[in-house]
Image 1: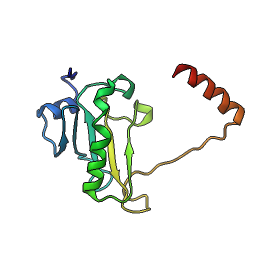
Image 2: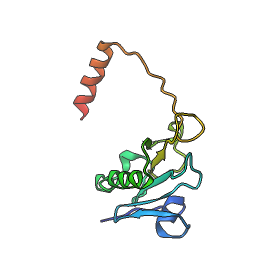
Image 3: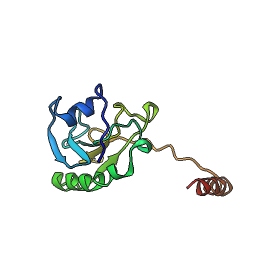
Image 4: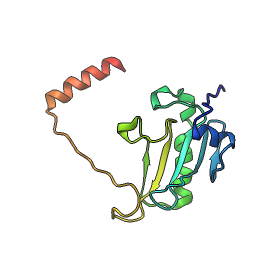
Amino acid sequence: MATKSLASCIFCKIIKGEIPSFKLIETEKVYSFLDIGPLSKGHALIIPKYHAEKLHEVPDEYFTDVLPAAKKIALALEAENYNLLQNNGRIAHQEVDHVHFHVIPKPAASDNEGLVVGWPAQKPSMDELKKLHEELVTKL
């Protein structure tokens, strides 16, 4: 399997062992470790061993181990409530330009620990949704 890395990428350096990490799971396709700036105890990251800034740039085969790794981490944390998060681009809150997934335990219903999410739900009309649906289906 071809891998792709970027010498200046902090996550690529972690995968290569050039920067230490608290490794949790490593497979041929992914590397996971504890976040050093966690939102809650056990906050972990899962990164494909293929350098790409955004999800759509990563070959599909690198995603086959992501959800199994996330599930194993959630089970090991014994997290009853948690978020699985993946951001693409700065305005979508991506801080490191290497695709990564967060497993973030949510131990309590407060805003003091874990992911805090605003959800600005829109109210599109059924006609708007139908038009969007038709447009997307033709592209899929």
